[in-house]
Image (cartoon, rainbow, N blue to C red; front, side):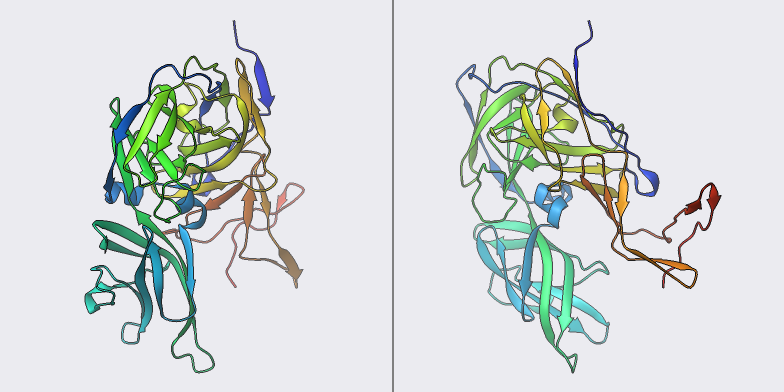
Length: 375
């Protein structure tokens, strides 16, 4: 007999030019009594290529921790400690360089400078802080020069991430804890994150998660040295469906009771029943990605046990922008926002993209113009 449905209601999403389709199902349960004593898993810190490639909430939502300085030098907070950081202009190469105190001597040596990419990014390997070494990525660097002479740096802003995690195994399943807000302390209030398995994306770290095939409560040491994992007994399950059909890297949902689940990973096995909100999501086709961000207008999804719950998310998509008309031309502002059926926002990775936008304007069924020109 088919399960009853709890419609929220469903929608379709599309990829188009930037790959926008994905799928997941999710289930609901109640985090009730624990079935056995917890198991303490020892964690060790690693900063490697896998951590660099991983999606985390902070990395996807804001590019990492936001930083600014009103000069050409300052200090980034790396694992709870200040690390000297600088930006300078190279006149001969006509490019900006970023420098980071990699060896921990408190200075910016000549071999510690890296040319910024066109998108304002630089990656520093083996950054020494205390007894640990880290990979640090600087992104979206924006520089304002001093006026009126234009010589010297007046202001720098950027986002940055420390690419590392605390890793251990629970019954053969990798568990990785990220200090996502870079304060040097692991907390379970959603400011840090957890990745279970090898999906390549972490979700907000709260109290209850699915680990392997089990629903568990977690207690993480503040220094990231261990996590105690305790299975939860006999959760009641329900199913949650979305209209995404492919490319869904992560779709994180959280509630007010300490439950945090990735619908891409846990949808077919079950999540606790409750009132959930979107934390973030990522769609990827392997070369480019789209980040799904919550807005203040996103709904609360009531996930009911024993039913198929269909989320209002995805298509129909709608676009918000400013446009003006003058002398036969329609001008559109560079800022274009794309939203889904649940008022979630979709933002795109344009790195490496080529070509110009295409638009189809119709007067009834008569097309006016297909290609846009910059200007």
